[in-house]
Length: 163
Image (cartoon, rainbow, N blue to C red; front, side, top):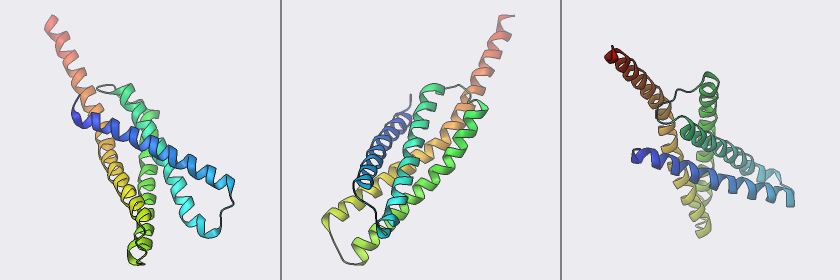
């Protein structure tokens, strides 16, 4: 297996566990204390994006482990994968929205809070990992189709050689 696919799986696991942790912490936080309207501006995009990215990473790992290197995706799974990819784009945009809000708060408003800048940096790093996953998520479907066609062609050629 190529290193880029090992990195793809590792990146998915990183996103899965980090955003699952973020979602759990936010849900506990929301249950323990009521949210104000000002909190909802960041809470809703973060919790939604966390669930979307977690679900996407879980689906990616499932598809990779089940169908890699050369099994064709069933039509229902392929449809689910396309729909989830659309939601994943929304999740990445929500993450970008969060980075924008953080950038405005920390840099433009001159608040220079070390914790805020650290959180902003980690979030930006997670966005980069998310973009890497997105790029390879698109490639994975194409690779599975290509490998399946190649395998079928080789199988048919082998049948022809036996005669």
